[in-house]
Length: 483
View (cartoon, rainbow, N blue to C red):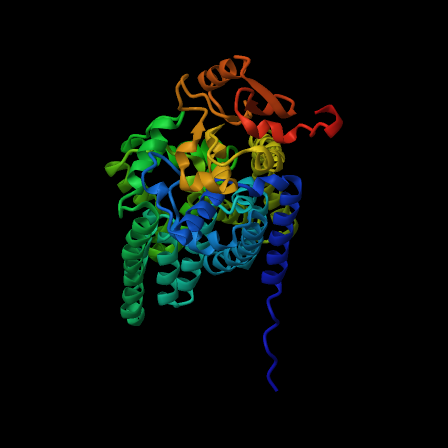
């Protein structure tokens, strides 16, 4: 009589922890789900469904991610989209464990997934239903499929990631490194992401009226951004030194490099391991993009590399403990706990900083903008213009149906000149506005031509006092005997 192996319950436990953490984080920042990129997907899908081509001529808008436009766009609901992302966060926790268990060992796989819970970027990107979050999930899924010899599924996962960010396409080349009897199947899997390219071009044509439409948005974003274009030669240094060493793993980056070196030294065949090749190819995609089109980098663009390196930091913690105390379990656990403390301190310190300086300000700003919705829907007449900070542009287009057909009705506070005199102003001076924009709009508000319809601290919804009829709708009708 044979006994079956005990069932691995860790996927269920870790998945539940990641799901619960995502729901808890959303309870802290309930309005954080209204991410500008997500709302832009709703706008793109609504316009495509209605046959509206107004976005084909705008100089700048969020670059469409076809997979998310056609998967999350039909939901037309930020809470519904977050529900999907929360489930995907649970899947990411499971997939990271499975990859860690196969690439390292079971203990490291468990710790890898648990450490990921402390990463504020995971929480924020899942809350925002970010494209970078979905790219990371799909890349780890591709690695897991390759490790389990499901090469065509691996290629399909990369193809879906390409439909979010085309820079992922080089990651398919990791399948070309497969040797032995599986080589032909792996190579056929590597060809699958190529089919995503015509789908991507067709999507751009449908959404933007041009197969290479996003190019003008990249240029527009870089021109409007307060950051600086990154030279190609500096990009790798930015990711490895600035993001990994100085930003994410200040005290524990050396442990990650020790873990990586030890992992490779143990078996030289790991030089072609997907856990090493995929992040290198992913970074290579961004390097290639920077050669053709220099861009302003943001940490979230390279979050997949950060998560990959987190795996090697976790492996380094476990491996150093094993090597320093191979025979004494208590001492080994003490060493691992001490090193894990520094890793947790890195992640928690950054989490508290991010939540105080970015997550909470966005929550406060978005909560106010949500309060303006019923007022502006009730009192605004279709065709009236609106001035808003750039970050709320997708929100306004999503909320006001007539602006989706005529985006020129919405001006952005950062980039319109002093001659712009809108009918409505959504004024949130702390919404990541530069000093010049605050000064310019502040003078417009102080001109005496506007009155407040809603206010919360410095934030306000204002309307022109000399605008015709619509304001009269909120005045009581005089009794007949006074006429």
